[in-house]
Image 1 (cartoon, rainbow, N blue to C red):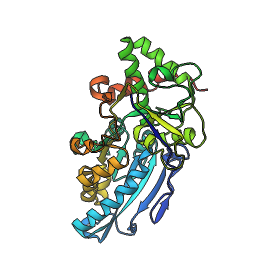
Image 2: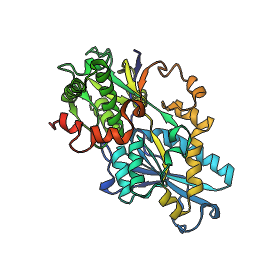
Image 3: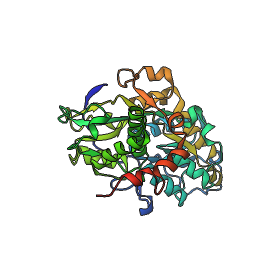
Image 4: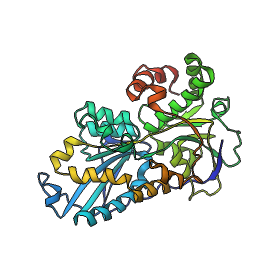
Length: 364
């Protein structure tokens, strides 16, 4: 296992020229979902015009919690790329929150041109709702996952509870912070990583169920999203260990130097955040070309390097190797398809109403 010393990055102020407020039903983690725009606004343009016919265009990216910093940087990169390619200015409106809640907000009318969510299963719900056409997962390379991540432990400096692997987070007296898998995509990855470890250790699903029950028995705060959980652990100083996206753990660098360590467990999960064009919206708004290019450009060498610099694992294996000093590339990872039968099966078994998570977790 690999232990790195890190510190926490305070949430950056929303950048851009305008700040939008979403309805309460769009709320994500912590203080709720947030939206911002980057570039010159073009709201006055008629939605029936095609993007190619306008001097400027606006698209909305509905994303999950921890991607705020990544897309703040990527949007600037894409604006430059699109301007050079088409001569057109593009404004990107960002919305962030717990992935499940973000998906529901789109179903309820939050008009996203693109979604960049924490897991394939959330986008599948948009397909089922008729907003995204079947086959979306094959529209972009790597099953529409331009970057990946995994789940690690963030502990306090010196690791006072001696947390080295999953067995340690279920011990009595260890206070765990993780978000709610009912609303957070990252929380589902957390749950599945713990389940995979227990199932491989015991080879018995009943024992795996008892293992995750013990883990969630140690959870003191179940935030609605990953960024809220990070805030609880880092800023509010609650808990002994945070089950975290790898990128969230590494973003712990600027505000509290030398206060935290990253512990990489012996086994984790290949977390594959997914991206998709929301077909019903782009066809109505005439933004299909810019929306598709926005997601396609995430696979460019320039964008892949930016993703690595923001602590996401680039999907390009050659570029990923350039970050071998940052990431443990030898970490044993399970994956959603081979080990859980895909997101539809995993959701039904673990996260649907009355499924295993509801069976093992009691609200405190």
